[in-house]
Image 1 (cartoon, one colour):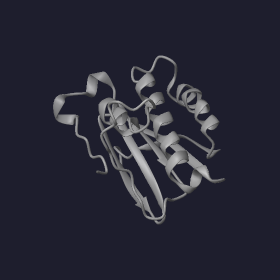
Image 2 (cartoon, helix red, strand yellow):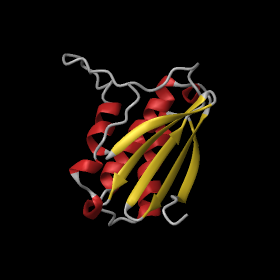
Image 3 (cartoon, helix red, strand yellow):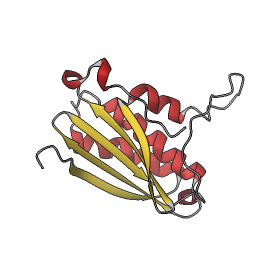
Image 4 (cartoon, one colour):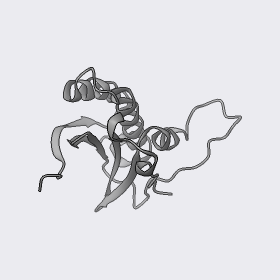
Length: 148
């Protein structure tokens, strides 16, 4: 099928917060430093990765797999965790007076990605986000398919 997404790259990292720093380099190496959505993609990858390490078994000695796929001006990122006892991602409003910045990852994802959502893969969850190149973007393409 001509519009099927091709795998551009995949990496599996230990579910440790410090592993997230590799993802921006990984995205740049795959997409090139001049990609028009590179900053958005890199930030969303690190947010999804961090959520996987904080809220799933990946952060308890497990692993996180990151895959980047694309076709014709569309980049799709996928972050697969090791499972969270059936819990799935859900957005919640951040506490406005909280000193920490927790609870903002999925809000950032909603703001920066053209579409996002998640798929269940047994006990694991694949959180995905799609980014259209500027020439392919229109208001009709922007939909939040978030998990909650």
